Length: 96
Image 1: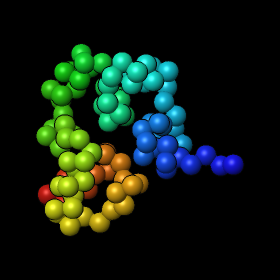
Image 2 (image 1 turned 45 degrees about the vertical axis):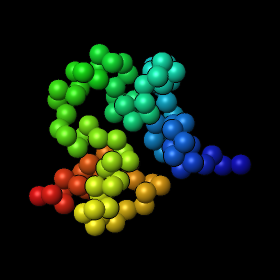
Image 3 (image 1 turned 30 degrees about the vertical axis):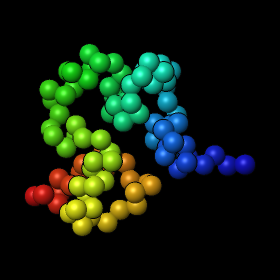
Image 4 (image 1 turned 90 degrees about the vertical axis):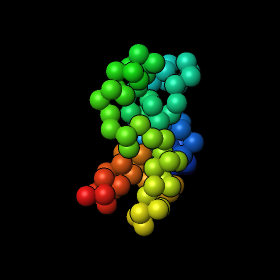
């Protein structure tokens, strides 16, 4: 039986399609960090504060918020497959 990476990703059970969580990332998830944060390299609240100072407004949004923004801009994508990072890039391109 093949691994269904799409389902695992959608459920937050892997970092990316074909990429499992590292031990450090799993620990952060168990300590309450969100899947989106950990996928963006934020493994603790201290890291969040540091990274947020460097991030633009789009990068701070949750994936669900980015999905809505992309839909509002008429961007075509598969909501079940698109990543948060790709949505940020697509929205930025559309805004230019």
